[in-house]
Length: 154
Image (cartoon, rainbow, N blue to C red; front, side):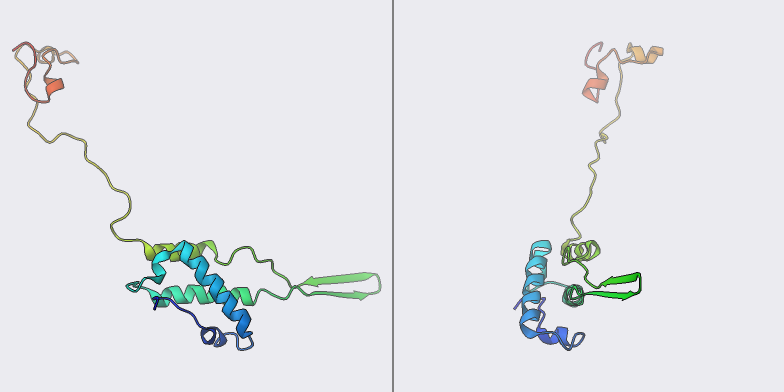
């Protein structure tokens, strides 16, 4: 059994009048979308099933309460008022919910890292007749190339 599951009874606690067929279809849609966003939610060893269930349930309930799309018009003489109770469904999950679901699947080993490129070997030893020893800004003995001893002018 997957770690995260939602039943119609989980929704009826918050929406007692929800139709069972509608609720089941909404649950299937939410679980299918969540599987694309965060596949780890459905692994047996998932660590945060209660938090994921809360996010999924909130999204489904918000979808259920989105409104019927009824438009009410009132008029009194030359004045009219129109009330539109519909709220168009754009996406099932809000961006913050998507972030929360994907964060639950991240492992601690992922993320940015650095690679140290500074040499840690012995100090560079220039030849006695290297230009650097006489105040120049360049190496004439080749020690800068070998990162060790002089290459020329031994």
